[in-house]
Length: 411
Image (cartoon, rainbow, N blue to C red; front, side, top):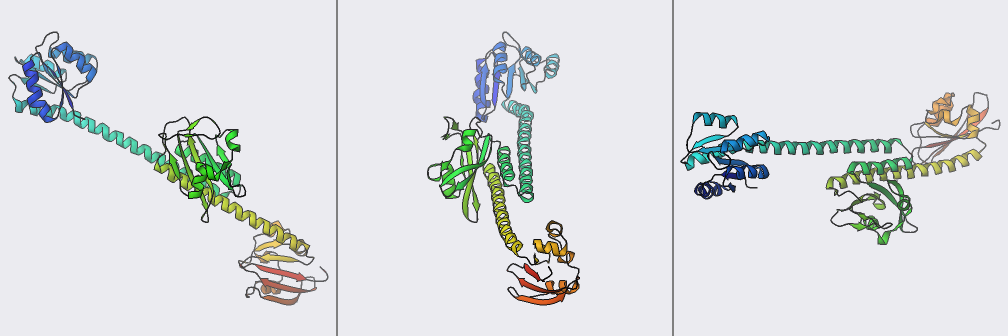
């Protein structure tokens, strides 16, 4: 914006001269007043960047204008013009804070230099304030970024340390609301049988919203699921909320992608606040959606392993012979009831421990851990610590695990 200069002088000729030949050619916006009182009122209301005032004027002199501005704690850089200069007037003017003191008749070159000098301090002050505001804004952004990274880190730890899917997904949604400053959030998963999205975790949703299902084919969240691309909508294009008469002023939806397939949508919404989400918010939500996907994948894998283990446990426990499994690192994976009795160990006490922890017979241990091919069945007969002959059968399984079965009529 053009800098504004207020000219206060009872001479129309001087006002026009300053306006047409000095100020406007330099790009200044000029305000004028024909007496001291009018000039004071304009200085108070307009707060110009510079004031050029005559000393001798009707109603208020230039010094009186400066004095009253000082009493009101209004600082307007000023240049005082006078036709009859005196040392006393100059001293008083400088005490009132003027930038320069000029004696008429006016010299255009001298006046132009005086104007530039008077504005230099104001310009530097304005630039300083701009840089301070810019620094404050940058610091605020950095602080928000640090909070965001810290929150993402904490969610990452939750995903890595917890197998409680409910707990992790609730943490993801709560973090999404916190990081972007939203009013509410939700994580919806796909019900493939009904082709609908249902709320799996939420923050600040009312009971109606938590139980509402949305068809993939006729909802914005469904469009995000199908396109596998995030969507952000600002308050310039409000959408009607499906289950109430309220309008969504801003929202973000990001898809949850697992092994190339969209399995759900993470969303945050504002219904009251006017703030529009930024591109950084989309990136943060995408990261949180990634964490949610990892948690769901981990939970699915754990449940599958747990089902397989339960099935295997049921099979081996039906066997009356001692049976146990070890992994490729020769650590105990499973011990059936007959093996627990034979080795006088509980399964929980030896799980994930070296097989040597349950076998005290070197010949048996060496045969079990000896190298062999996947699918190969090896058998031998040894005498155990009870002087009983036992038949040992070892089979390597795909993935590095090893199946061991002991057969003894005394067991």
